[in-house]
Length: 467
Image 1 (cartoon, helix red, strand yellow):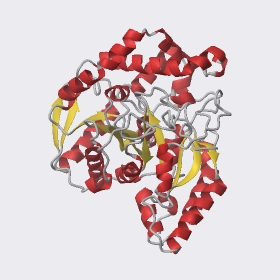
Image 2 (cartoon, helix red, strand yellow):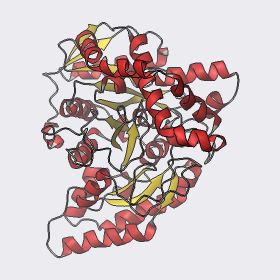
Image 3 (cartoon, rainbow, N blue to C red):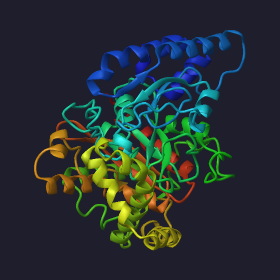
Image 4 (tube, rainbow, N blue to C red):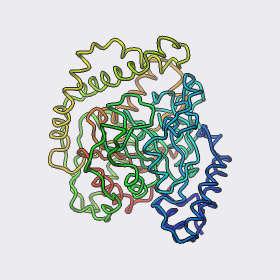
């Protein structure tokens, strides 16, 4: 018999709905694993045991009364500690907000509640969402469940680690330059950064509002599709959300990828990739070919320009949000975090406005050059093997900075372009550490990306492997 913690989102929801398991038993199992394994991974911020068990019992009562259950009924989740629930402390991984208690619940969490999901609490993250590795000088470094000496990825570090270690079935994270995809890649799970505007940001601490996205981390594309169908959609509390782009994403998961064309750019994304990563990427392309997909090689536009403009937007928006704290409480930031925010104060308004005005044109150029007439682009998520915590925190500063640049090389520009991207596990490097590719699509093409990822996962088993 399959252990409860080995069941994913869709399987758990189905088992609760048909009565083969009780929601309370599922939630109790998850709470026990959080107690037993969470501290060793430094994955947990706050677990609300009593509230979670009460919610689970309510699901069981609803089912026993013959009433219909929501699509996530009884599924145990926990989320990055920047997504607000009214009355629950939310530190955003920082010292500055350690006593902050929001008065509102985020739209994304409210929609999960309505669908019957059980919220167990909040998970570790990098301070103010500003580390791609899981560094947090206030609360300790996050740990990778495959090897705790290695980075779990950031800034949604607890989300990636908790899902990979089977502590929860899934988690919501945020992604401004790769913060869903990094932990998904390093922990060997699946993570979706949606198109900007598909999922409401209302009730979440921003980093750079025009780049921020909220999305799910789970074990499979199928689980991601179930979650996205619930949380996506327009929200009057977030004027950036878009109408008319929401669907039941599970309906796209036919297993048939024979009509898809996948673009593979050689320059920039692959030119500095580690040979072990390149080998795994090529093996994943062979799987797509075996499924009938067509692979085409394409070019890359000026990525130096895209990365520079992304840095202007992120730097200026983050510095604007943090200016009061930078003025009044500069010593309460970790040094690395403060050093990433402060340069944004020096960008002139004209440079920021120019970067914003150029986004649409540059996104069209990137799509025309990299994707051309294909349905999606296949890129590394992480072009180097998962780094150790020591590699990213010790030694010469220039070497650490270069490594961090490699970690974010393939992800950060996608946020500036506003495009959707899904990180998919594709094997292991030496030391049995996960590797991952990402599929990037046109705006609001999440259904196509999920269909491709699901098709790949039907032909492989990497997403089913656990530490």
